[in-house]
Every structure is written in C-alpha cells, then in structure tokens.
Image 1 (cartoon, rainbow, N blue to C red):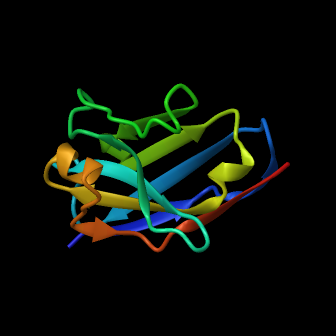
Image 2 (tube, one colour):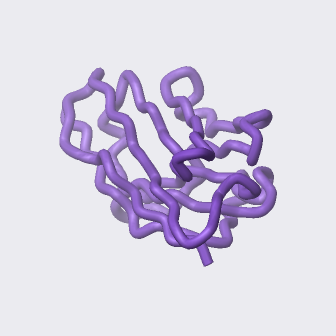
Length: 123
C-alpha cells in the first residue's frame, strides 16, 4: 500500500504561483508513475500532469502546458507540482495519485490516491 498526502494548496491571486507537494509513505514510489489530478466544484475529476518512474515521460493536460511543471524526488519519496501563472479556472481540489504506468494516468486511472489539497485562485 502507498499512502499519499498532498500539501501546499491555498488561496492566491491570478498570476501567482504555488507549489504542491505529495509525500508518499508505506512503499517507495521509485517504481511508480506519479500524477496530479484536479476536481472543480460541479465538474468531474480531470488529469493534470504525470511523470514516469524515472522522469523520462511527463504528459500534461493542454490547459496547463507551459504553466505547470511536475517533478519528483525519489530519494524523498515526494512528487511536486509547480504551478505558475495561475488562473481562476485552476481553482479545484488537487489530488496526487500513483500508478504502475504513466499513460494510465492520462486516461484518468490511478492505483493509489491522496485526500486532496484545495487551490483557490481569485481574479
């Protein structure tokens, strides 16, 4: 089992930056693909970004390309999401997930999920 805990969310203004962290415990994440998803009020959960176990593949949703960067530190068992140039439409609960293959995350699937952290962007 992998336990995931997100942190770093908050209330910011449009144009600001935030860095989300996802700390894993229970097992090392070095062999897992990791990813970030988000769910806005009244909407379905959507894929944001993912990173393969070695960082070689990093797919992004079109809506965040060029603004968000996913990274990982396997030694710290932690995954990050750097979010720049935030927009009000980025407001959502952001979830961290782990999966065996990075491309399954693009399809919206994950094996383990965190509880989420709220990101609110005011205009």
